[in-house]
Image (cartoon, rainbow, N blue to C red; front, side, top):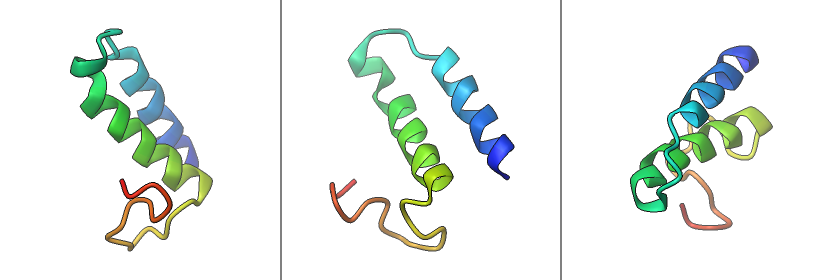
Length: 54
């Protein structure tokens, strides 16, 4: 599972264009995957991040 998450993050980072507006959705996906990887939120939680409200 951990290796799959790392692979997905790397693939998404390769898609970043450098344009913040175009990259917002990709960066959000990366952020959510990194939270799962680091155990920041419960997998079954409907809240992505209680601290920042994402």
